[in-house]
Image (cartoon, rainbow, N blue to C red; front, side, top):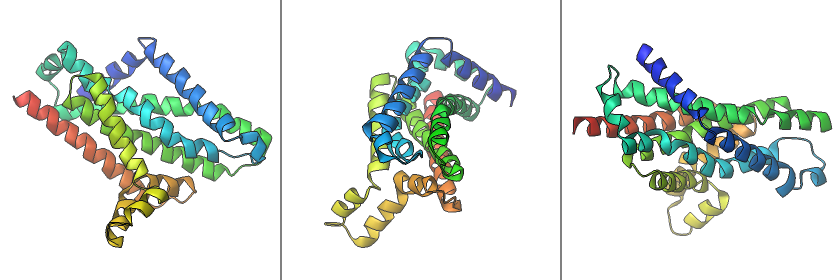
Length: 244
């Protein structure tokens, strides 16, 4: 357990040891603010809530989260420090979980910094606080899911650009597969049962459910299993590389 916390603290500190973390946070906040208050003409709608923020957030995170995840293992492999890490008295699982949770906390900090938007909508109107809370819960779980995907691809290749591109494509598929327009298109040549299964397995379906304020066990379980599956796959890949 001490080894796990050592990796966690080392990784979390490394984010703020360079200006890259602050640049990421600034870009994320500017993009989130633009998509919320400008692109959807927030003030013209005359409805003070966070709906536009949460609706646009998956499309922003498709790019921002892989940008965070691509360095998790690709950088370690490129500079050769991963071999040193493997020689320490720590299991692969502890190393993966420590780095993953540190990156997830960093993304949680990025989400927390959007809190002034919440204060803005409460100042302008009387929004539903429960919907905002479940929206942030869904966003945090989605960030963890995208991060787990990026964690695997970062372990697969030492090239950060390749890891980023593969992660973006995989996250895009998870979101797009559940869109009504995509499901309608798939229904033109796939059986109805298969189309329904694709919609159920899509991240977008479960994210939208939580965003509407409906906290269901199967939605939470979906995100937990998605994160656990991709992180476990990352652990297997690194374990194979250590053995070889």
